[in-house]
Length: 141
Image (cartoon, rainbow, N blue to C red):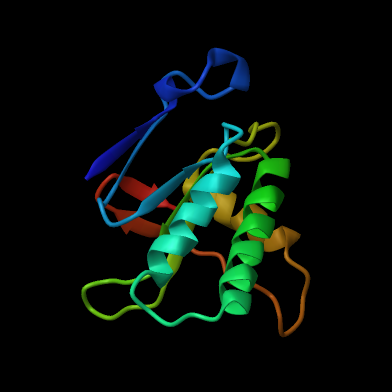
């Protein structure tokens, strides 16, 4: 596991001083709190295409999609973007976008938060399902 710690950034960025996140070593971390995040995304895309015949257009499209995701996340307070393209069991690619959101009226209890999110989702076929799962560290929404 590698540790992503907020101590790497200046206090002026608004990252909590007690923030730490452990992720498996296979995950690629992009620090969205620093100006170099675009070059970090490019490094990720370049590494994923090493030793493969990947059309330049596909690489550009992947980079653009990741950049747009990162920019949208940054606009909403995202601090980090973790990427994983392969897993040992052949699972699907994954990403993790970590944001700091002020609680305001948002419930802190996971069950209450899940119910609050459900109320905010529009009815219809595209409605996302919200649930609480038990993790080793505790319940998560």
